[in-house]
Length: 239
Image 1 (cartoon, rainbow, N blue to C red):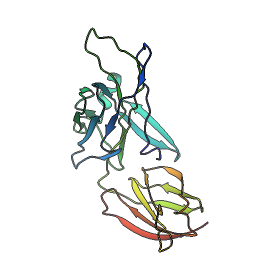
Image 2: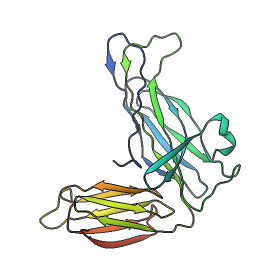
Image 3: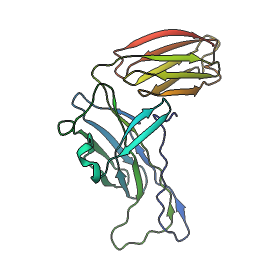
Image 4: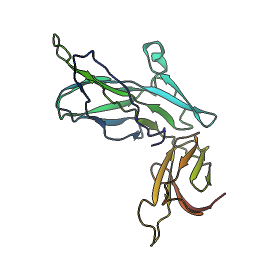
């Protein structure tokens, strides 16, 4: 999984007696697009048999020089610059419970440059939940997720370069918006694990490994916008 959709692993450790376990915590999607007003929803689920406490944060991100992602964490000290907020930055999930966390646009309160996608990471970190007075037993290592939240530009401009390097695919996305790149090398003799999808945020220049059955001297590639209003097909020969 590439960095745009990667798993953020965090460790919440409570001082132990002698047992170890891990909570099963999930989010419903790793890339979330806002509606036309900049608002959205993400669903958190606890599949564990014990309650968990979940803490959420907001980090506004931008890409520098194609490969460096700079994060600006939202804190009380920069409150006036916040472009979005979470309806439930902290919550408790009971065993088997799922809850929606709303993402609200604050662009009516601050200046938002929508000439390109506004991009955020939303780190959700679970930890053991104990009622007041209870002792935590065991060391619990919990895995969190950091989905990407995007307020898409209303005036997308597509400008990208895709290079077939044989076992790798380089995607240089100079567009002002995210693109999805679909690679299809399937044929009568090659019909298993012959398709791949890559998601590349605005400004990102990324090299991806191609699966063995996807590699081909001539790749069938389709580039689409997130809403599929833009679509372009091409055949890429090996460089």
